Amino acid sequence: MLTKILIVDDHGVLRAGLRALLSAEPDLEVLGEAGNGDEALSLAQSLNPDVVLLDLSMPGASGIHVARQLKQQQPHIRTLILTVHEDDTLVREAIRVGASGYIVKKAVETELIDAIKAVSRNELYVHPAMTRALIGGVAPKAEEAERAVDILTPRETEVLRFIAQGYTNKQIAELLSLSVRTVESHRSNLMGKLGMSTRVELVRYAKENKIIKN
Image (cartoon, rainbow, N blue to C red; front, side):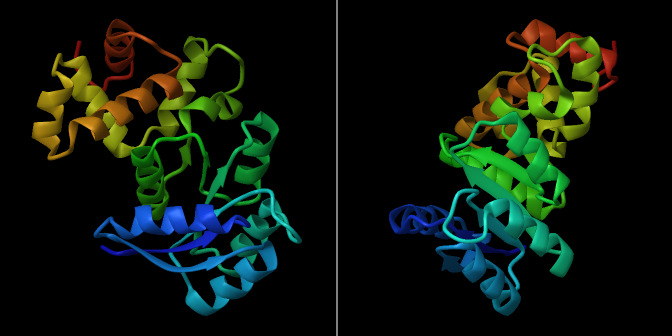
């Protein structure tokens, strides 16, 4: 299924790079680009994209304002915030006004593509570096990790199941018809979201949450 995207950022070079990256994906199509918030709202009305890839800091209307307006005017559009700001308050505010995702610009290419596909499926996506803003706390405790399961995507849950069963990244890639790099990205996202750093922790978590049987 083709996902149609509107890119919104005030830096032309970045927009061009994003267009080139996304256009290389067979199931993604870039409909247009906007350099400020007002232009973004106008193009969203005329182009009717599935996903708006939205910067926060732009001349004129802010990204938060645009996300709020899109939610009110075109609630079927999914808004993915793409920003340099690693700010817990901004993450919470963006989600509160209706954004479907939040990813930082230092993310690798596969993470951005995964994020776009996740929000297009009506899933919430938050970059692992910022997940703690939603589940509270600096170092997630057990009860916080339990809440984190709610923001795992179906694919991340699937990868977690295979990791917990002892499969290698290469084996998981073959089983799911993914690249090893994509599996590594999912694994990194999982550890970031759950606040874990070892496979042993992931296995224990998968058992406790009945993702695999004990």
